[in-house]
Image (tube, rainbow, N blue to C red; front, side, top):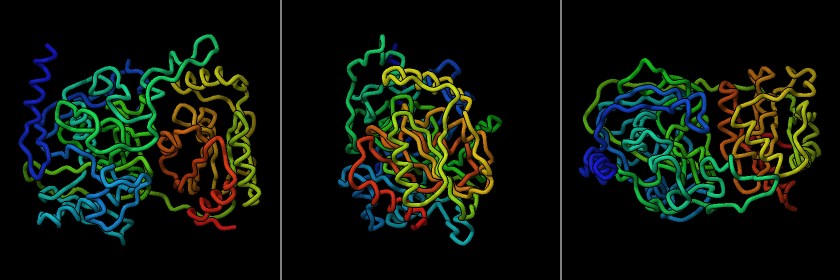
Length: 454
């Protein structure tokens, strides 16, 4: 039966192509995740969607192609065959236009820098574009309704991610207080765009390697729009999909949604291009509602378990002279490393909000919050979530700093952005637990990137 299904899927995803793109035959599917899917997030409401035929690139855009058309390579991991990363959503739409012009096609997008980088999508244009979120998930699933297009799990031999933490490993990682041997592979870098086996539609690295920008603004799904949804006309965060080289297995799920502001960029976000299979009609606008924040008084707010993040916060205070506040839960976590990791993953999975010991006095006086935390299970510790929900962050800027053991930010920036979607987020800083003699310079460079000099 599985063999027959695979053959049918291959027929659906025709081998016909336009400029080496794959024709994805449209159809109906259930977008989102069922309530019983492990590590499901509240913004993945399951609903039926239909998409038309469209073309999609089999590979993520490589650094060689990006540099050839733009003259730049902003990637953190430099190699022409690796996917381009460290690009913003605006960089991605600009690349699509440059690729269209280079191939004598009509550019899809019109960008208005003077209108806060408003973007218009001409659906009749035949050039390159980003897939919509619905198109991306339809193509990723390739006929499946399981957490991954590899069915119920995905191994580090099938995708590039933080393979020490495959899907659902959190439930069995610790037994009787003893650390088990870490499974899987963690490569700690991107891999060539043609790595691993493609899904049944012929698409490579839909799970892992780099996250991929899509057209839509982040919001709860509008389940009333069933045909070719394109998301809201305005918003503060753009969506990227698929997970990346530094993500845990749970964040590679077909339904998982990550988000960042349209001018934000990271070493784990790239793109994959699409094109119309048939001319559409109409203009769709994308209007940024990103808030303007005032500069002013700074607060360093941090959560620390082992003392590493506390030490970083102390360095930042010495440099800035800013006020400092420690985020502390009423009920402390265990002092045992193995036990606290078990507690942390249970809290995160249940999305608990621990009660905090203290409140910030005169919080309204602060305009910039330097928010520190350790990377716990590829996200923020739940006391940080409590902190974000306990205050009004309107007209403020949050600038994160994160201590980690190898996964850098994980999906912590997305977690922050989803909890306070109408807040400006500055450029974040990640520091390995081991620290280093160059910590002071790293902090000063990070502050300068956020227009803070001392």
